[in-house]
Length: 67
Image (cartoon, rainbow, N blue to C red):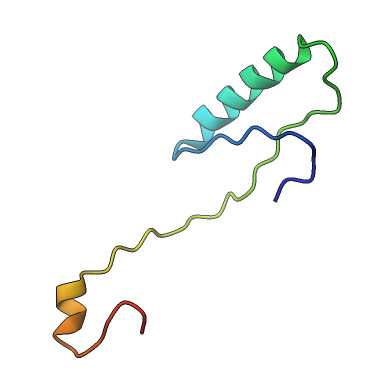
């Protein structure tokens, strides 16, 4: 998680676009009076899977999504 008073989180699938947006946000924050010590951080560069379970299909095996 973020360990600061304020954080801006940007989510998306394209890392190049996310980096570009992050740099733009940093440039904007740099112009805001009172802001300091901000930086870009990539939380996870690892691929991940978003799995959607077909409830009817697992039910045919006598299972539910909690198992």
